[in-house]
Image (tube, rainbow, N blue to C red; front, side):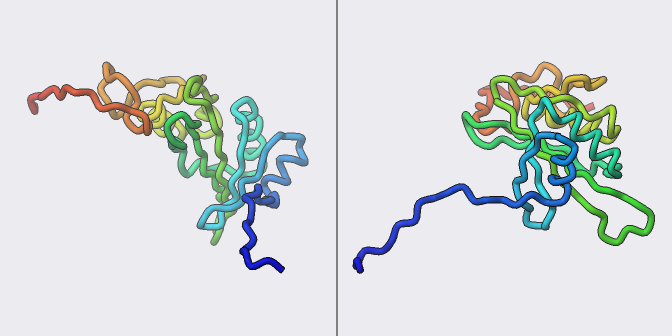
Length: 173
């Protein structure tokens, strides 16, 4: 027996696929389980090339409500992430099934297909993610800035964003 404590090596934790992930995999859709979030909602990683097929399958399965589409930056030099929180709403549902889809895209080529044509609530939400992070939602009918002025340079919520040295005063009307 040694007096030195054992050093554990970090290994990738095995994440068991949840019911939605298994449903998608049974339909030959390539997805990866990310476990559950703090609220117990199943999270699934989807490649951007498979996003529309996965979303159409989920919509056909009853996930008829896009509660939230958002984005975040994993860190300087790392991927940008577009997330979709979907809910299966039915009459008198006490705790409707939920799922969170995550699409990781490289910051050098941040393109994701728009889900606007499946869930119309994605309209302004995708525009906000575009405006703040520069993720281009291909196929969106009106992808333009929504919070920043149209001539603004850069993506203010990226972690590697450098704030411009100038501030223009505007008169209130």
